[in-house]
Image (tube, rainbow, N blue to C red; front, top):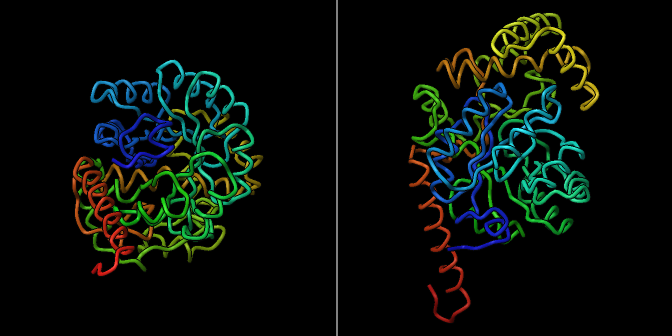
Length: 355
């Protein structure tokens, strides 16, 4: 077994984290990851608090291993979600976008491990100063919201800047990557696309096949989805979004906002309050806030309804290197076996006559 500060911090067997992915990281995938020795994370942003409570209960029924919940700090009911995480004894909380210092402090006071995601060294330094227990540092190869710094440059930079465990994300899928991340100073790896492409993932098979058919040039970073850089599979829908004029984009986004309001149960005043919070937290214009309403609806179309032609598919560049759909248990066991073989091979390089 490869023991690192991350495995010690979380009480997990292997230094592998499954990231929170909207409509993907529910009870089934989270429990399968944790039961296999990694850290599964529930994506709560697309769930109501009642649904989140039910999903947490289901994960507990499936496994007694540690797991986490990912939250958005700009959600209007984030305080309620934080109290739910604490009350249910969830081991870890991760944050999508920038965390709030008061929320981190409340979680830490209750003994919950706090793991914000960062895309730059300065962000890691800030949350470390606030008391974060670890950070997930996502390089530009990562799917979903992403930065511009490649993983191979970001991880050593962040690892040198903070004295808490760093989890490397962006481009990982096998044991060689795990060893590379450890060499850069990370304490483990986080993967989204690789876990999406498992037999435990709830994503419809038709959508998984689109991912498997993609190559390493099959993703694109666009701001036309929700106003900030977002790496997705390159599809005709994404091309249409990129080509749409500003008026057409706003109309489409407003329509999707109305649809998401119906699904989420949010009232229009609540939706507007959430939009205002996004503007304060990110500096987005109202037009960009409306564009952000695209994301939940477009993700749902692909990840739940199985319509890759109509939906949005967040994806890391690593999708071009994936060609199978193992279970989470098979995937994690394979990664750890490959990592051990990689270490043995590297050890032989220091001996005369090693081939």
